[in-house]
Image 1 (tube, protein in one colour):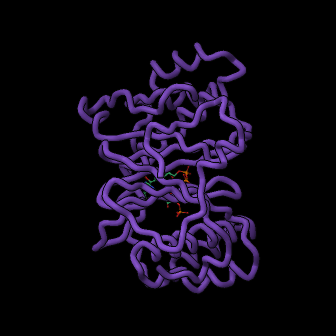
Image 2: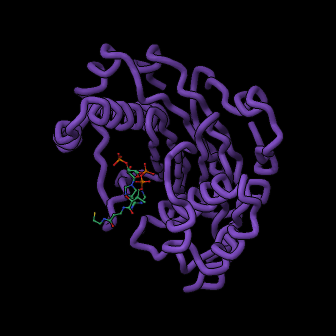
Image 3: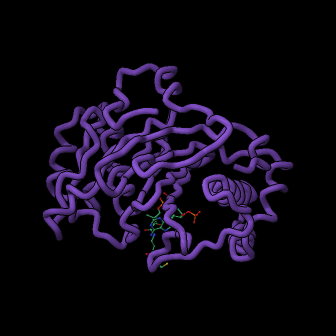
Length: 266
Ligand SMILES: CC(C)(COP(=O)(O)OP(=O)(O)OC[C@H]1O[C@@H](n2cnc3c(N)ncnc32)[C@H](O)[C@@H]1OP(=O)(O)O)[C@@H](O)C(=O)NCCC(=O)NCCS
């Protein structure tokens, strides 16, 4: 178990960052302060994929079928299938029987359960956050994406964030942009509004060596004290951030073990 104070530092070696992610023991349960983040590979073998397909709902299968390329279809199937299996472990329920509902802007949730969750995927990896009785949002991005970060920042970040980004040395600006982007996305995903929430109306800390923090929110001055942001160090080539409602937090990072867990029950 790890406290919120354990924040990944830029100088930490890859093996130290890897050691943040552990394989869970036999059983999984969640106390109120716990927030679990699961790291998954979405490139799983054909047998595992075949096992996941029947547990998807008809609308999920239809969504999967709409992907033009098989890689997208397989990764969506893996993400939704593993999400169902992981939630089923906490709830001690058949993953195929879980019924997702969708809030106005598309955030999936389970009715009649205190369990809250959120998913993010980037290329071959996914992150799933799970908590009880408090909202969570998570975002994962691949660092190598060829993007024009300066024009995206100008379009979406607040004027103060754009100004702070310009003070970051050029060699570190791409990383700072991604740290800021994932922190902002994690917040709007925790709120459930997604990109319908204007990203330039609130500010987060920006540099990778700054603690992740919601600094201020234009439409409500108390909002920044209601949410915590955490950087996740998901692994080489990826940046991830988590946003959690409320202050007490025990973060646990789990690595999804392997296909043998596909049939695991609590
Ligand atoms: C949510 C959003 C920020 C996702 O951004 P992204 O970086 O492309 O994707 P990510 O991989 O991080 O997250 C996608 C996952 O977040 C979840 N999600 C979808 N909408 C969400 C929302 N509004 N809030 C939180 N989570 C959401 C889903 O699980 C989704 O994955 P899945 O559909 O494969 O299960 C973006 O798609 C968005 O703003 N959507 C809202 C669109 C909207 O307003 N729609 C209204 C009509 S439904």
